[in-house]
Length: 269
Image 1: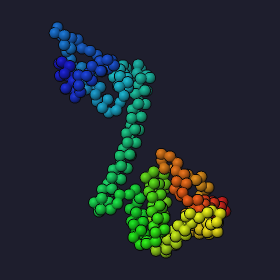
Image 2: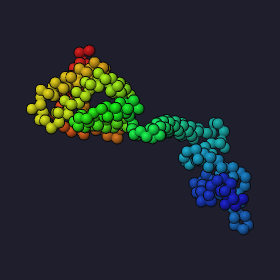
Image 3: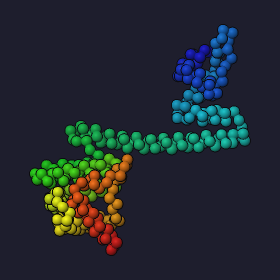
Image 4: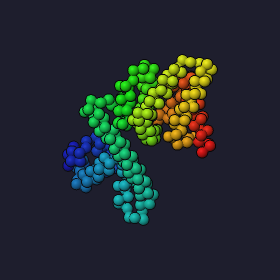
């Protein structure tokens, strides 16, 4: 067989065959009297093995080691065989990681398709939490309350997309927004929160302390104790500063004070 024929039979190109010759993976066959290389069945078999290994992700350097160890006995294989096993373990591990990623991607896309087929908005939030936010938004007419609600939803979506927030957080929000009594308290707190915007921290000390105390009491009755807050949120690619999430100084002060109160509660327990 000439080079074009053996390349077609192996599902590759003459250029790739010549590349394998240069790398020493495939020996150059003898030439005929007319100057053309004459590839035999053994050459085709080796070429197809090279392609089979490479197509499965094995680096060409490891392909050379695999092919060379096959011609040796067990005692001679030694280091090359160990390297091949390590390469294969790494490839298997990479495949498992890719499968996990693809499974998650499949699940997300299936969920998006379901939402699109129902003409619903595409969101990373759990269905129950997204629906609860939609209900609350439809019931809300106060502009300050609406703005606070949208910011809270945006923040939760950032955490959901980053994958760095526990599922319990979204479950807690969903359950909280599904309870009429808790929603009523939540909306009152949102209004008080909204009224802090633009206030001086020094001038709003009483309101800040009052709101922080109420937040700590409500959260403390339902969430487990936790330690101090560092002032940043991990979004995966970077740490998101609290100033980015809550740009208003008075509102930010209320959050820090509530966290301090919750941390004190945790120490007492």
